[in-house]
Image (cartoon, rainbow over all chains, first blue to last red; front, top):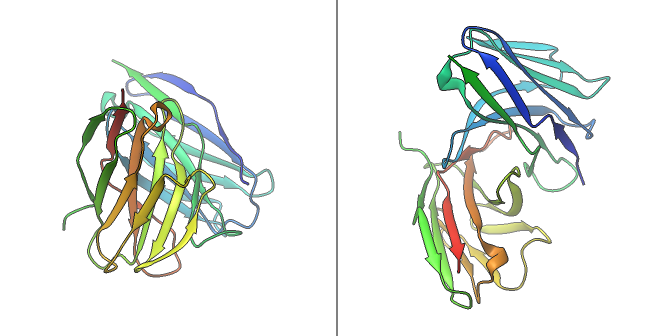
Length: 113
Length: 114
């Protein structure tokens, strides 16, 4: 099976940048995803990156991919209190079915005013 | 454009009872997934449908669990003889045809078994 690892907690001040890190094991992944989950809610797809890219920017979000180290990061610029949530990185399992996602345990982001 | 919907949002049941959850995917999404999420964990894959065909089931899906997608649109997940360990959030996701694997999740059904 797959292994997706994330640090569990991150606290930042409003207006600062947040960087959430993830490592994964499946080197054949074509896409990697970031999801956001607010309390009691489902998962919201935030962004994704194709494996032939090193970086993708989407408004306040920047995704960096280091394929050699199997390391993915999500940077949130000008973090707001509304960004407080759990962030999951997800890696599709190409060895199995088309699109089964493996998730990390999630990083709880707390933004202090 | 409506997203993925799930019903009910919350279910409390006594141990040993059967429960059924429904998922309505985004229209024209041919792929549908069920995941289970327990407290402090990420979602874990349960099963996957492409149109009406159930193509894969996780080892997590014991004999007490069954899922259907009879006409390739909505799906149901039934748990028979519920156990306290079945308490979790059950998430449904759908995905459009194509090469990407982006999945769009519903709000989930929170099951509590007492």
